[in-house]
Each structure stands twice: as C-alpha cells, then as structure tokens.
Image (cartoon, rainbow, N blue to C red; front, side):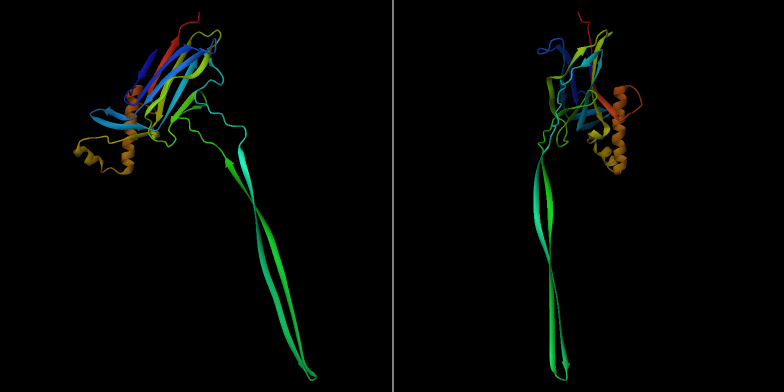
Length: 254
C-alpha cells in the first residue's frame, strides 16, 4: 500500500482491503478518514486553514463494485406523505339600490316611491398541502461515480474522525483482469477552504490589511495555488487540491 498524506495537519486517509466476512468471494474496502483544522507552513509564513467540504473518490481497476454496498447511501422513499387541508371561506358582497319620487298635479299631491335591493354571495375554496419529510443528514454521503461527500449539516469546518475502519464498499475481482488495484483520493475545492491570517508579524500584517477585499481574495487563491503546486509538482491549477491519496495493488488471486 502506498499512502501519501500531503497535508498531514489537515487530513489523514488510510485504506486497506479485507475479505468480506459476510459475503463469500467479495472484498471490503476499509477506510479511515480523519480531518482537522490547523496551521500549514507556506514558506516563511504560517497560514491557518480549515475545510468545510471534502470529496472522497475511489478508482477501481480490474474489479467491480457490489450493488447496494456503498457506505452512506440513503435511499429516497418511493412515496412522500402529504396532508391536504381544505379551507372554505365565504365572501359576501351586499349592494342596495333605492329610488323615490313625488308628483304634484291640480287634483292633489301624488307621491310615488320605489325601492330595490340586491344581494350577492360568493364562496372561495382554498386548498393547502402540507408535506411531511424526515431530514437525516449523512456526514459521509455517497455520490455518483464512486464518490463520497464529507460535509457537516451547517457547512461548518470539518473536524474529527469521519470514517473509522468502515467498509466504503464491497467489490469483486473482474474475470481475466491483468491486475486489481484501488486508488483513493481526498480532495477539496478552493471555494471550500477558509484561510486564516497568513502573516504573523505586525509589520507585515499592517501591510496586508491595506488590501481590498478582492485583493485579499486573490491572495487566498494564490496561497491555494501554491499548496496545489507543491502537492502536484506541476504549475497547472485546476481548482482542486489533493490532500491525501492511497493506492493499493492486490496480489493475484490464488
């Protein structure tokens, strides 16, 4: 097994493969994942870094994942319960019309009066639907293409042990495969990283405080690029930083 925790202050990833105790002929990919916030040395300075979301990905070679064996895969219920509430409200509009007149001739007064009124009523029906859905947050949630998202429900910083000798999934060897290998990677995107104070001495910090918000944001990106370049040993930055990786190549099956 070849494990590389490039930023050990932030991430520790360990994987191993064991025969499944409950399913004959299948193998378990056992994973340990620990995350923390901490100080990372950047040249002559130290930067405090925390992570809010991490992606754990797994590449299989010469093997096939067992359906239904992935860790953290909540199943959506086929139906959703809803309460139907019907509210009936009566609206009444009243209008009244009246008229009166009087006539006078030589034979005597003649008075006439007439009145008319009309009444209108309308009924409005209102339907209110209320849905009931139980929300359960999975800190390690399965995604398509053998990926898992690690995130807190409130998007706070990741801190603690998220996988402790848990089976990430089960797999079987493919027939006539030349070799069987696994590659696990723990990656973060630049937008999911928070940088603390990058410089410690007061003189330097007074200079950096004069930066505008945009300039300081660019400084954060530059720091991320510096970390990524150091990890990848190449200058191209793709917006994703690999904190840890682990590679296992299995011996030939007997």
